[in-house]
Amino acid sequence: LGVKTDHIAIRTSSYFGIKKRDKTVRVHGLEYVIRHANWEDGLLIVDDVFDTGSSIKAILETLRAKMRRNMPKDIRIATAWFKPKYNLTDIVPDYCIHETDQWLVFPHELEGLTREEIFTHKKGLKKLFEDAGLD
Image (tube, rainbow, N blue to C red):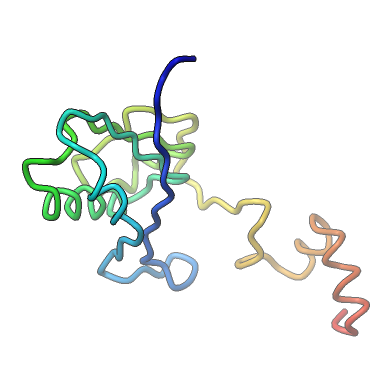
């Protein structure tokens, strides 16, 4: 397409259980962005779920503190799932695919599912449970 891009995975952490969140959002892996991005660059931050906005806010605050005048001038936010009801910031994603106020359980997650739900929807795990004598 003729567009030069550079990608890096970063992550934040604040959850320690379903609907249980630490007050502090930790940002991991921004070192590459801080070293290589410049004020004339555009930056797209993509998050799977934007709910309280605290993860994106922590990322932006960390970038501002560490990059100062070198912070990219055009930063946009994209998300697959936006939960506007829970947004505690003044940040709104520039791009989103879905809006919801429901708790999301993704296909790769087990936490919060009953044994029956796991066995119904994750048949391969049912066999593992049976083979291990945990049924």
